[in-house]
Length: 60
Image (cartoon, rainbow, N blue to C red):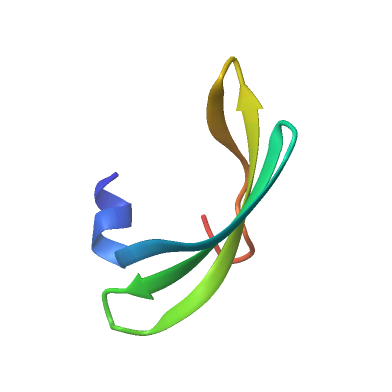
């Protein structure tokens, strides 16, 4: 978790699309150096909880 705190300043959801047990969530990411970009996550609902299935490009 510390690595993410050092790299990312703000991760803000901006759009979500839910279809059944799958969701696509777009987020605005602001880095510690104040640069920013939009990323996309694919989520799956398992046992009533949303879990990240895929990270957008550039996330590690």
